[in-house]
Length: 284
Image 1 (cartoon, one colour):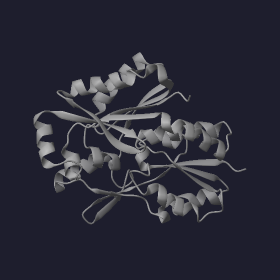
Image 2 (image 1 turned 90 degrees about the horizontal axis):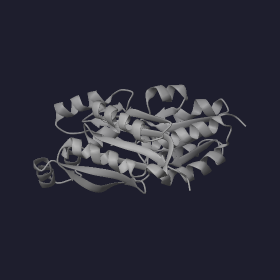
Image 3 (image 1 turned 90 degrees about the vertical axis):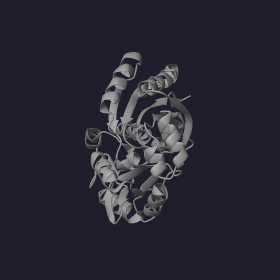
Image 4 (image 1 turned 120 degrees about the vertical axis):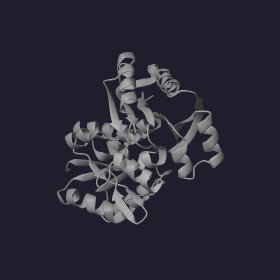
């Protein structure tokens, strides 16, 4: 049996140094401003994204990679005799998974396996790292997929959106909701449940209060954490991310707490200063 190549897409938001160290394949999604289309993380980074939003007054549209994109990405490794395991952005949020399945059909049976993370951002990244470590231990693709089926429902993804502006610009809330939210300093908290972005509750008041609540929510699950990786993922909120990282390092037994930057696709939907804590619970 050949070696296993783990793939994800650009929405996994893993640190670039991890992608390089563990040789994780990345297939970028697309962001489009008017007639100009960019590959997430390749042609456009998050600070550049926000500059373009300021210039145009609206966030970009986002799009999944095509089946041809996946075929192009997978082919060199298949030709080397490697098996591909691609862990995708949630099917509830994108056609990325379906397009990867179409691509997989162009290769010999069993050569390319596609797994739906039912998550986003480092909620995908957590599953990718589980797969990477399992592969390094010599597990087969079917064994890794079996593991991922157990890990997937244990991933906790919760983040605070700093402003309703991007939800409004993206058509996800009304102008009145945006106005009232801004006046009352309301920050929605989003959780990923069954692959969907689900409003969990709203925090009214200062950003500090919102961050304290985010941290408190994570720490309330301390006995259930698997003590492996905790991600603090953010969109241009590095100072707050470092603060949360230090608090989690002090109050959990996690092997590692890592800050990571949200890419262009995630940032397009959530906006600047969005920040989340993501981790996995123990497998029962």
